[in-house]
Image (cartoon, rainbow, N blue to C red; front, side, top):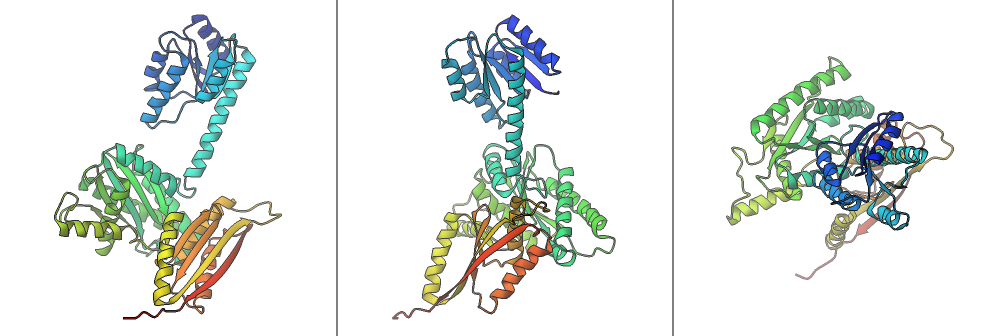
Length: 454
């Protein structure tokens, strides 16, 4: 059955008995005699489940459990499910086991059918949880981490490891969507993801930020030559994939631009490092795209260690501007959105103007048995449609899982239908609308310019 079980018990007869039962079920079994043996063994092994006796000398089962969890957390490993074994007749041990976070509890003497069934249930439950976690954290189109999960992972990596934080941007990708349609655009993104996977190592972590922009953390990558080599490999293979998808007549200047920053040379705070990498990417874009740049390289002043007030001023400005140099609208959380919304309200209240507020709610249509995408997939697709269709000055709030609150600035009543139609055309071009209902509400807010005494 391929299930790997580690049994930890100081009683040799129990080990022999449990080992025989599990091997009859074609399970792989490893037997250990103490908690210390388990901790040493788990340093280099990852079984599917551990059967852990509570009453052991020197280090009991509960102490072993806590020590193992600390070790797994320190190493960034997933917690291994544990079933406690105990010959104690009272319920205290069972209660404490579940308080600790055990997958299950089995009393001695061990009953064969109960042992097998509870092991299989615990392994299945753990696998289902891991699958749910993966589905919630992975971008379905590329297989990379999505923005939310990826930001958390890269924040941790930047704080603990040495390497390079890289932002990757596909140059002129919008032309692919415009000329070939969004379905072909999705195929290009999938091909790009495959190209990246072929050219990075197992320990490197990739994230899809949104649309055609990605970022990654590359452990122990620390020089400009390595960045340039990665850029060349990615571009060469991407061109090959583009021709394979679109044919030999493919003439769009599709390429990749990379901006990077070294960690920990420029710090360990992800919130500070990302704008530096983005600043390097922006310089690549300014000089013709299709290139790579390492923040602080020759020709760019490294300001991170300078106390000169002019240089510090330039550094902070560069970092602030770096947050939104990329195309598309500003997508924010509730706190950020509220701050900027109140600023805009005061600004337009004083100087006059108009904004348009929009709410989109996506839901499943009734009596639809089959659809090309689930509702959650469709919501992600619609998010990308908004990113493609709106302007840099527009704002997007993902209020709930299926709701988008949008602010459109400096838009006349005559222009709004054009913008709205562009959003829906982008959505429908992707053929993702079957079985998905989109409800929307729109409001114009017109501000009259206030008069102030000089």
